[in-house]
Image 1: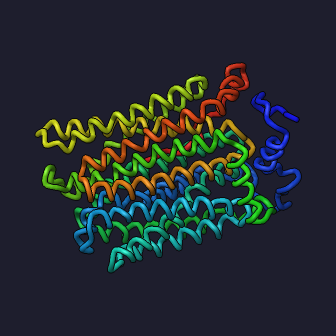
Image 2: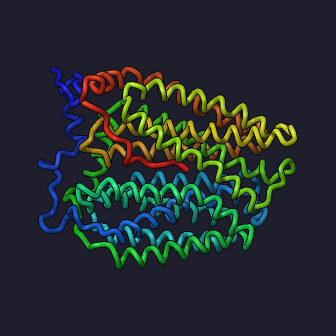
Image 3: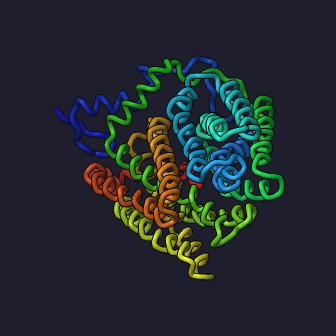
Length: 455
């Protein structure tokens, strides 16, 4: 037997049952606790601003290491490839936190969970500042990544606390904080390290996490769990979503390829800039990272286009992946000792690369959030976890490629990720065809305004 989905797509009855399980129909399996669950209309402007600041300073923890790798390698007497694994450790920790901690946000009291994670994050960042060896620093960085998933729980919590009329504004404010944290994290790290050394970066970050934990403890309402299901059932719901939605799986792999390429570049470019060709100081490396700010405008423009023209999602994704691979021609020439042209080509290539990664990410979310609107938190868990796993793979692969083959090897490795993404893009086509047809007949896409930015 076959049944129709909400998009008008015929699927086997067995798969339809899996989708219903994946959506976590609350009427039968996840009742809110009476009198304890958070409700709308409880979000003050001051609390929104505090949540936005928390998003900014917390997400920054994932990016501090990138401009510091050259300094860390010299300070701890480690090879460049080994130092680069710090980025991999942080991203792998973040992916683990997304998979195993974020699902607990709906089934635990949010205030002690969020503030407890921030307090632990403060301790792990202090451990980074005091780490005597690279392995200790790597372990502390991984734990900091795990606890930094607070960001991914604050945004849906704010959406729950806000009234219908203020929900979009509240989410936009938090996403603005998230974006600021991403854009300024590398520059902040470069400036502070240039003035006081790389350990000071983590010391200041630890203090910011401690202050934020105390402020949230005082400001957040102490609600009970939103759902009364077990942790195991919540994890099963995430797995059910992944099994039931092939388009989600392919789009998640496309995201992993884009973020893997992105992480490969930003992990290795520090060594190029600090090397003999450019001789950048720590401060100059931090300023160079501001080139990535162009991706913000690209992400917003992509979101508006994808809302208005859902039929463009699939072809635009392919074009962005192809252009992303091609951007590494310019980036590769940035290490070719062409005088002043080298830096110009490098900056141009980075602008194109970042725009393509951000545009592809927003387009992916437009597709993913249209699959099961009633299960977006679980869709997000699958998508973002896979994306950061790709980032961890990209940073590790880039570090090894740079150590063995230099800048040419690193750029070729980064370019290989979007090429693999094109294969996933082709595989996703038949699974998205019915969804595009439904959108064209008027069922309409899901707005991507609640998406996440990359840095």
